[in-house]
Image (cartoon, rainbow, N blue to C red; front, side):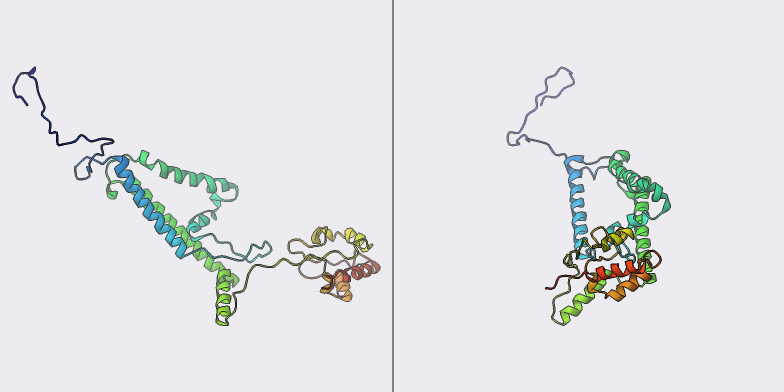
Amino acid sequence: MAHGHKSNEKVVFVGDSRVKKGAGVQVPPDYTSYPGKSEAFIPNFLLKEWMVGCVVLVGFLVWTIAEPAPLGYPADPTNASFIPMPDWYFLFLYQFLKYPYVSQEYIVLGTMGIPAVLFGGLLLAPFLDTGKERRFYRRPIASSLMFLSLIAVVYLTVISWDHYTHQLEITNTIPEHHVREEKAREAAEKGQEPPSTVKKPAAAVAIVDAKDPAMDIIKQAQCIGCHAADLKGQGSFPALTGVGDKYSKEELVDIVTNGKSGGMPEFGTKLSADEIDQLATWLAKQKAPAK
């Protein structure tokens, strides 16, 4: 290359034919060792973030497999002693929704509003926090929000679990999965199959003599309001089909006349003795067909 002080002097660069010109995208070097510089977002920084995200996701999946959510019994709307509990990683949100300012008339705020703000802020964090400093103690706002979120999640999780165990002690309730595990262990010790918690549906029992005048008495007494129009029961109210297999005529007369604990009212003042006798006679016929 020629040298000189004249501005119009021709400059000739001599290249080395052994050095090949790079093709494709030129990836810049890592500038982390240079003060005031940073590395390229794509692909250097983004690749590192993806790798960290994959490690965290795999660790989370391993944790959920090692500590799976307990499998309870099938849902039973008539079980008033059941204490609902979500999976452990949702305990903080479950506890959060118990507070009055994010539940009841503010339920939309608690279930959609606040989570949308939190997740939206997380998505917008790279655009809101554009500083080049990477040390957390020099990023007070982002670091404070991160530590505050972690403390809130841990606190709400602990409070939720403490409240759950306290409710178990008050109601003297043993969690269903503990009962299931204990029965399975006892069956294994005896060399038996573990008991199944799935209830087999009872065979449908047809109404016997559906055209009997007693059906008019049932409609008059509004029995179908509790026992359903097909008399197969609903909710906590039992079916009247097959009731003759459980009670005799005399017992049915007493139940219809004086009622029974559990929601069965007395009809001794609403129906005459003849109507009660006719009704009890018909109910005593309601039996399952002989096999």
